[in-house]
Every structure is written in C-alpha cells, then in structure tokens.
Length: 143
Image (cartoon, rainbow, N blue to C red; front, side, top):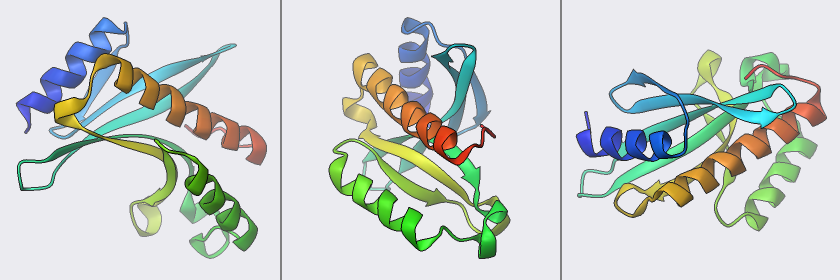
C-alpha cells in the first residue's frame, strides 16, 4: 500500500469536503455531487510504475462493456470517443478491465508527486462531467 497515495488523496478530499471510501490498498472512491439530485461515482487509483514514479488515475465509468453487442463499442461511437480524446488535454476515454469486468470510463492521470488539491478537483469534475454527459446521451445511469 502506498501511504503517500492515501495521505495525499485523503488530505485533498477532506479539504474539498468530499467523503471517500477506501476500496483497496490502491483504490479510493467517492460519489461526486453533479447537482439536481444526481451523483457520479469516481474512482481514484494508484499505479506504481516501479521506477519511483507514482501515478494517480481518476476515472468514472459510463457503462459495462458486456451490455454492448459482442462486448464492443460500435464503430461510430468508437470514432467519436477517439476524436474527443484528441481534443482533451487532461482526460480521455478508455476501456478499463477485461471481459465481463470491462467498463467504458472517462479518465485522467496525474503524477502523485505533483498532484495538488486544485488538480484533484479539476480531474474529478472533468471525468464525472464526461461520464455524466455520455450517460445522458446514451440514456443510461449505472454509475
């Protein structure tokens, strides 16, 4: 477990007034208030690259891939999401997991050593907003 990860994220989320749940040694989650009675689940994960570099990944799921035909995005949706990736400097769309556990997620990655409270806030707002908008477009709200 990365004590630095937990200390940093817990300090920043407390300062932002957010309540978190520790889901594992490298995983923290929160429900982000989107307003109008809506919320979006956001997961904050720790990745140690093994060379002294630690990454914080902030993500929010839109849907489980196993709910799609052949567990795949359609061509049009895939192209749309890839085009969005090219336009977003701090976030992107990704498929997280494999098989039945795979999810389409909005994600943002930051260096743990550089992550401050404002950057964490920025990342959570961006990925929660991306996921919420796509859920609305698709007519789903699983997360």
